Structures are given as C-alpha cells and as structure tokens.
Length: 489
Image 1 (cartoon, rainbow, N blue to C red):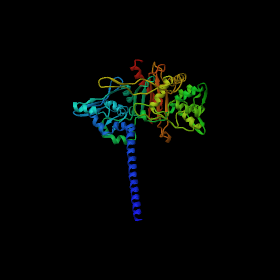
Image 2: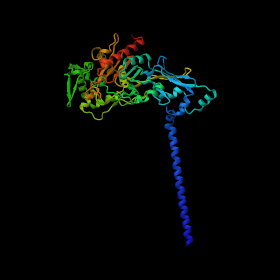
Image 3: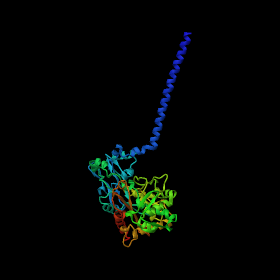
Image 4: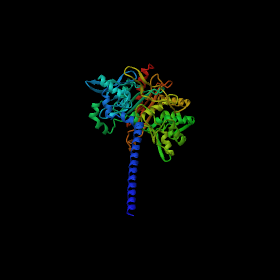
C-alpha cells in the first residue's frame, strides 16, 4: 500500500514537473514569437523612420563625413550650403530668415525641419545602412558629397514678397497655375535658421505668442472670408444662378441672424457678377441658402477641402467642418465664414484652378535632385491634381473676377496694360468676435486673365483693414515683377 502511494506521489510530482516545463516552453515560445513579430514590424514599418530621424546621433556622426548638398532657387541662386572650417562643417543660409519656412533648419540640437528634413537622404546621398560609404571614407580620409536640390522658387520674387509683407504677420503664396510650380512661399513672422541663432533664441521662439516657427503659408488655417465667394460663384454659375438678380438693401435676416454688408452699404439690384464685384454679403448669404446643404457639400469636395494634399513639406489639411447645415450655416458658407478653414496655399490652388480653366495642378516645390557632378536623379513633371469646375464655368467666373479688379473691391490690383482677375476678402476671427477691429485681410488673384502665368494668395493677420486696401497691392506688385521677368510687360 505504502509502495503504491509512493509511486503515485512520484508520478504526480513528475506530472507537475512536466507541466512546469511545458509552461516555461510555452512562455519562451510566446516571448520568441513576440520578438519575431516586433523585429518584422520594425524592419517593415518603422526602421526607415528611426534610421533617418534627425535625432539619430549615429546619423549625425555619418553626416560629419558628408558635405551636405546645396539648395538652389530655379535660376541657380544658392539658398543653403555647407562651409567647412578645419574638420567642422556649418550649414549656411545666405539670406537668413527669408527661407526659414521653406528650407527649414538643420541643427544637431533641435533636429531638422521642412525641406532639410524631407529631403535629408537626398541631401546626404547615403543609404543609412550601407557600410561601403563608411569604409570608403575611412580608407580615403575624404568626405563624400550629397545631392543638390533645385527649387521652383524664384529668389527675386520671394525676396520681393517678404519686403512687401514687411513686419506684418501672414503669408504670401505665388504659383504658376498651368504647372503647379511654387514661385514664392513667404510666412511671417520668420526666424534665423542658423544653428547658432537657434541655440541662442530657441526658448524665445517656442514661447512667443506670435509663433514664429509656424509656416503660415502651408500650415496656418484661416477663415477665407469673402475670397470664398469666388468659389461659391463656381457652384452658383453651375446651377444657373448667374441669370438671376437680387435686391441688396444692405442687410438681411436669415433664421433670426442679421447679416450686413461691409460698412452697411446698400447696392440695390445686383446680378451675380456685380454682387461679386462689390462683395455683397447679403446676396451671397442668400445664394448660400439657395444652393443648400447638398450643393455646398459638393462644392467643398470639388475644392478639395478635407483632402490630403501631397507636398514637398508638411501641409495642413483645409477643413469644412459641417455634418448638418441649417440656413444660417448655409448663409455663413456663402460669405466664406463659419466652419471653413483653409491654408493660404490651398487658396492659391483654388485660384490657380479657376485661372487654369477649372484644373488644379499638383503643387510642387522641388523641381529636381542633382548629383554633385551634375547628373539628374529626379526631375519633376507637371501633373493634374483635380478638377474643380468644367471649363465653361471656370471661364465665366474668371471674367467675373476680372470685374472685381476692373470695377469692384479689387481695384488696387490693377496693372496697366494687363488684365487681372481677383477677389478681396475681409475675414472675421476670434478677436473680431470680441468686438475688436482686427479682421484678416485677404486677396487672391491671377494674371493675365487670357493666359494666366501667376496666381497669388495673400493674407495679412489681424490687419483691421480690407483685403482690397492692404492685400491687393502686395499681389499686384508680385504679379508685375513676375510678368516683367517673363518679358510679358
């Protein structure tokens, strides 16, 4: 009996031991499988991001052995290059703050931004995992050279845009409507991207209420104000509302909400063209209601609002934040207010689309990537992005926008001997909601109307003035300069 009990205890003990072994094996198998899954995920999805991260110290060690590529404007003006003093390299930005919101910065302390970050691999011309480069450098004791970038930016136009902005905050975007090339891209306030300046002023920059590190042209989101009336006109023409007339008494009440014209002016009988020319809020509020929720949502989709736009540097997505729209919402959209937020670049794209017979071209900033010995690695070709209107509708709105400059609120954009189309805008914001006279001033436009070569979007933050008063003259000067450069004036 005792022997049987002893045998049972031994069997039971052995079974428990076997179970423990099985549990340990299962746990080890699970851990091993987890490790395999993580390594696979790392290899497929996050390896490249970690390796190319601007905070990767090993990458900085490798970068010391490479002369970072130069960045040029469209005509070969050097905008960023490396200088070598002894064994040290320094990234030099010859024009200081001018390209801080285009090229960005390249800092061992604060990492990289914008083009310096997006095109880091091309500027270094390395595969981060390639040991051959390191071996070659060790054997020869010499530095290798990165690739150069040629931008679509025109330095003279960029410089002029910055000068015209002065100390006012906001943004200017100029593009070629038939190709999508970005000709100028200015955001204010700006900052000096040199590493020594960043180290000295970093805390000041990140704590400033003016947010000088924000590239307003591409990441700033603003209510478009009356510039959006040009876009609403596309849908109005499409639905035949350009054949109607409206009585403008200076104000209108929609569902209990009072909407007034700027300065409470009454314009009398207006058709769509003249309503756009004088920027009548009462007429466009009525048009918004007449178009209704479905058409306005269709318009937002046609304009690419909410659509992610692929670009050479980070770009905020413009927003049309409506699920259900009452009549007051529809009226607000009609005059470019309400829950609409756009980037200045997106407004330039919409303007370029109207100019280009309804076709919006893909925007691009980097024209080509070229090796140190002149071989072209990557060459961009213009491509169609989306269509926002049919050609006949776009042509009709082009003529209406020409009327804005010829006889309406955009007279300050007139150019002698050149046909100009445009739309002014005065947009309310959080300060105007508190009763302060701090509206944003907008202007969008293009020239010449018959064969557009430049489309411009200008916004001046909290200017307390109209778009026609402050923003239109900036656009005019830029269009004049570009057309002169092209031999068209």
